[in-house]
Length: 281
Image (cartoon, rainbow, N blue to C red; front, side, top):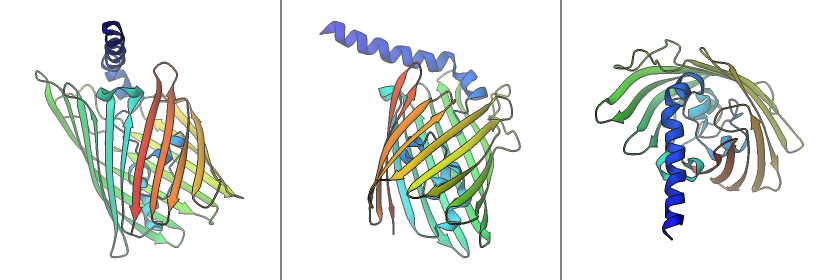
């Protein structure tokens, strides 16, 4: 019994130590401050720069202009089955004037290290097939009692085009001004640009995306979704991201309610389960 407890504790310590020892490397190369939310996106390996559900508020807010309705959602993930690395996100969007107003918040970590990101923004349909967005972000990262909390403010820009009902493209830019934390000048927030396209045919949705940190190598995402029935969707994706190499998931649509599940695999640390629930009024 004690041996089992020891093994579980050792696993948790190993995962935590892995992230702490590589934390600044992750910041520089793998964008841990670029929060990704939504189990649908996770199931498609985050090839989601053209997705137009509520989770577009994390991936490319411009897509929300094509879904001008009141909607909200909650997402949770338990990274590598470690409660100390769990995260949660909430988003809400509502039509306003001739566009969509939206807000979101995310939390990641535990009592010794945690991150919070909050965002608020607006998206507007410029033309029938083209929209643009801006989101203002607030970041905070608590490292320990000695280092305290670091804070930063920046913004994001998005562009989305629905060429046809089947063909879409999107572009998203995070932190174009290279903003940095107020007390960690040597580790600025990553500046990241993403662009990609998707195409839907005969119930299949194919999506691809390139994500580029200004200071690191490009990350490629490719995913797919198949409409198995009117209410059941199956998904899968691959990526060369640090966070996962492949993923898969399921989605269930009940009129205005959407429930999504996904599992993403890390080549060393194993699987991360995702769950999200959203409702459109």
